[in-house]
Amino acid sequence: MAFENITVETRGNVGLITLNRPQAMNALCAALIKELGQALDTFEADDSVGAVVLTGSEKAFAAGADIKEMASRGYMDVYLSNFITNGWEQITKCRKPIVAAVAGFALGGGCEVAMMCDFILAGDNAKFGQPEITIGTIPGAGGTQRLTRAIGKSKAMEMCLTGRMMDAAEAERAGLVSRVIPAAELVDEAVKVAGKIAALSRPIVMLCKESVNAAFETTLTQGITFERRLFHSTFSTEDQKEGMAAFVEKRKPAFKNR
Ligand code: HXC
Image (cartoon, rainbow, N blue to C red):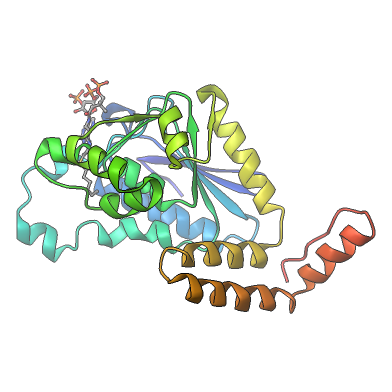
């Protein structure tokens, strides 16, 4: 498939999507979001792909929604077109794990897209921020909600109210990112991590992702009950038998994704 705003490739069993609008710091225009959705759909349907890495350039993961595209829109334009919900939220619907590999700026919608992924690996030059307030609007793709859940009220409130950026070290301390990696090694490391996940049992990985995500939507008791049901269900799979047998027999498991 030919894309204008992203590049798409596979590395082994990992799908790699690279945001590619260097002239605009990978600003997330509507065409880019559409292509991103198409690429994710393609990887979701591809049995040879077990996990996806989403990255940008070393300079910018993405500097936000495209301000030039948004600037003249009126309320009815954004309301009737369901701006953001359409397209963007598709990232959260993907059942295969998505690792965000973030180097450089991840601002506004860029930070929000990274937070829609399952976890974030940050390059040591990464900068996260929700600067919408400085251009007369507020985060609109989940920033006030996902950032607050990720790093707590005080830091999220400060970032959203002032537009202050957080560097990679602070983002790791705050729990926004899982690890910081030298920017030059970031994509290779992300592909390696995603490859590890992709080599595991596909259905078990999907159940695990679903269970962790339930933590954001449920009470603790409901979440634990949900987890328990999914945990029990893994015992109906061939891959649970294979995984545990391989441990007992001191060999590597050969998962069949069944
Ligand atoms: C459109 C953008 C852009 C954006 C950068 N560019 N960010 N175009 N939308 N979000 C363009 C610039 O206009 C410029 O184009 C080129 O990219 C290079 O940017 P510079 O500003 O010249 O680079 P630099 O001085 O290095 O500064 C980098 C930067 C700055 C700190 C990232 O560009 C910046 O502050 N960008 C805006 C960040 C922002 O406010 N994001 C939130 C957007 S609102 P030209 O043609 O002049 O060379 C948002 C809403 C989310 O995301 C709600 C739902 C999605």
